[in-house]
Image (cartoon, rainbow, N blue to C red; front, side, top):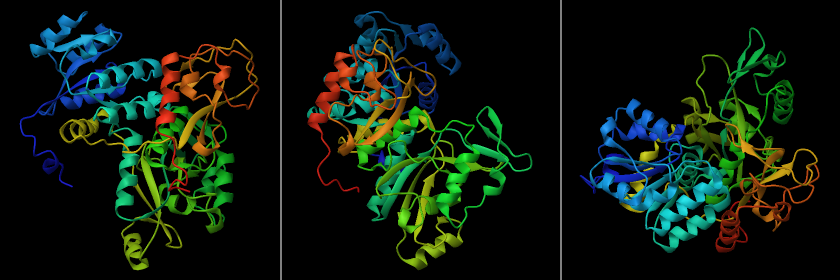
Length: 467
């Protein structure tokens, strides 16, 4: 599709956005890209550290006299009316000026919910970058947007929206989708000469892995052997589970196992790995969302953060032609993998903002339902009074293993992971037990209400399309 044609019906129209969490990494990439686009402009930027935010904007090429630090509604309104960027630390000031869509990128479940809800109630669209917010309150916010004829959407450039786009492309074409997913954030890079394996900034010895570069006849045996060979490196980030929860609620594809499979696989193997067990793969069902660890050699292109769909092939001649061109088709020609090996964060997000504002169309799903729940199991015995802190790059919750439950398997009183974050346990939780709502002594009341309302308003339909 020619995207120039897509937005050609709005010449001269500038879409204006507000941005929360404006000092973060995603925000920077969006702000940098907006400088190159005449039809998109920031209006109000919210961050707790205004000096840091001002320095970032100057670094990106904004003149200091364009930037107005504002501490009340009148100042925000006046700044935007004068064509300046309003910088605020108080989130309640975001809606004091005119703009079209909020980009919520704080990563804070409670703060992000409050800002998104306030924007919707003020008649503004919302692009939700904070998957932590969406995993708890996304159904509620989607229902609220629908009531007001507004758009609530994921944002292009992050894996959930990119994967939803790939899934719906495959479905539109009538392809029989077996599995969908993404790779972990960081590839496993093997130097076969030394047997050393690197993941981001960690390098370990993995001498057995060099002999496992080829997928054997027994796929499951090779996958299991690779898992043993890379056991010294961590498997599975909380962010992976959260992103796949967003995809599940927006598409109906659900996990095969609550810990997901995380096979160590090369890109060319995806169509052999992600197929049913009775056909030689690792899946106990189809219609699955999952994550894999991409194995590559130094100098090979990265898949880190990329997304994929695996489909059953149709006409054998068609797919043999595609195999001859180097596309990923299984060894028996019955399955194929289609993938996008990138996510460009805020560089791509403007497409979602323009689509939402100019056409009233989301980048995410159009019928989000409670198909899956991002929950948590205690890693060890957790005594009453334990504070479940949230931190780190992947927003892990202290002492808790993230799990992704199929909606039909989730207990009615299960606590979503990011409702549990920052709470204190009211009672002991044994190792391996799911966190329940009654385990939380001081859950944020607003988040809890949003969780309850969303599941009531948008339950998963019985007999969901996906298996």
